[in-house]
Length: 395
Image (cartoon, rainbow, N blue to C red; front, side, top):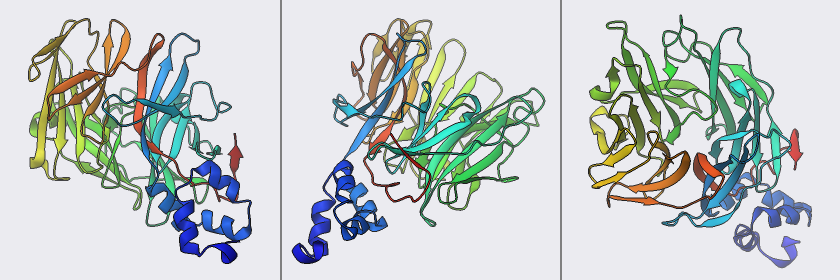
């Protein structure tokens, strides 16, 4: 049809502005349109021009089991609502989003991240992953999801940390990688350093910088039986791990009551870490590495102090009362603001912190029952998975 009415370049210019649901219908017009819409170059062009929204995963505690809602928000000052994101309801009632990559959503459910799917909500299709390995000892696992641009392949990495008393922090985690192109898991034996992640589980925070995924990690120090903290990275192309050093004040800690996590989102260039130190007062710090891989470029940009039920922000000159725990850093927004979850009298409140302008705003998102925001990341519509020949399930 395009041969008779439009030059291909004009047709591409028109079609790439349309939403995926419309383009899905257009693939049935004729073979040439289907070939054009499902071509990798068109899929990439369409995704680059798709608007980006901030996805909030909200938990409704009025139900048993708790029901999760996925709200797409415009990235304006108050995160005004745009629409809801519909994920497969047949998968598991207690699933959780663990990562988003190029409009694809990786979802897991259950202990050990054994149940996994890769979903494209734009075209309502998903792929179920085969069950990864189990281990005879006590362990916990987390997963991340990324794109191997060299091989044009989407991959899931699963890290299983042994948490029994004998090996905790003294052994390397077990690592597997799933390839969407092959449909199989592969064991990556001997590639991970000796460590355990600071936060292990399906909600383990991680972030992407320069194409690498990062987690806060630690291992036992052989010198003083303390802990050495660092940032663990994984390269989806070469399937190798790396280590990013933290400032000396963060790296060597004698107490076990310290958690250092990566904060996702942002421009994908600055590595942002969040440190919570137990005790009284409880200290919460945001650190940013301005020059990736250069330890001297770490900069502490903000500090909270939790004294009893009072959260103090000295640089802002404010104190928030009835705070029952340290804030949780959910993500860095494109503006550079940090999205924080606060527990105020048992109710989750979402705040946006602007370090540069020194503002701290309660976004007033949610309502009765919608008390916890478990995940936040940027999402945009895509046509990926539209032309996968096998294994797709529509919903």
